[in-house]
Length: 411
Image 1 (cartoon, rainbow, N blue to C red):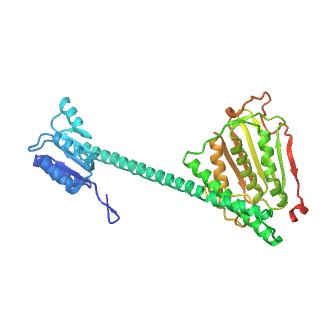
Image 2: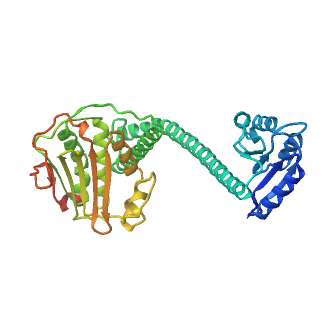
Image 3: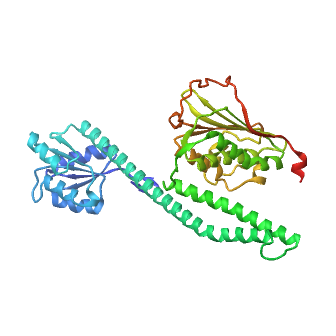
């Protein structure tokens, strides 16, 4: 126990009707640094326990008014003393007495006359075991509180995200109608304002959707709509969706994939989202004139890999765990200039893990980043006969190559 920041010596309640035994025990225990409280029978022992709450009890069996068996049972019947260590020290050493002591709730048993050195070691061992039990209980309680708080947070985010979606969809819808001059004629400046409103609304809706998906994953409520997935199609779709972003950022982007990749079992929307998140991040944090590559391949006994390489700003080893945490932000000049809310990589990691896969990040500041997503072998539908064993296998460039386009970037 602690008092005013200082650790107090463990307290021991000795319950024995023999004053000589009590005196010898007190001297031996105090000499070893313990605080000793004495009681002459079970009734007084109960009263002193309620008053002092000692860390351990040394209890005799044969005592007037209330014997040691009854004292053990009484203490075990109350929640506050149900787990207190009780070491029975008695002259009764027959098996029925020992069994009866344990049945009554004794933690351990020693016979009189006690070997004081062994008693000291036994007391210290029991106290150490009790401290470990208490620490375990505190850890379990803290874990349960943290889990409850996390569930409450996830429920709150999910509910708030649903509430935000409705007005955002209305904002996006009406701004689109204004931009298209469906309601009434507008000037060019008014249309520009309507476009800004729509773009901002779509950006906010994307953030809300990410928050909702992340909250669902944390609450184990995000389910996969699994079906046969053509890897070539999701690679092509993901590449097309970031094509304009790469052109405007003057990034040399290309995807590379086998001629006939095997189908996989998965959620096509979630797999596409994984690729788009990784490619968007790579393009966002790569300087104009840089390069981004998406490479898709299958390897022997390693399933399907999706590898996104860029020549961007990169991260240090210490920054990678931060980037994988929800709302994690990497503090660099380019990152702060183009940062989002820090949900892309954490959500991607969760989606990959829902498919039983893994995500690995290799990065170096100023040189770029490589993110590798691996889907397990069991998700592949066809078992190829020419599984590649290394990077020596030929790779066929697929999708379109998007070289630097200064004119498009400036438009």
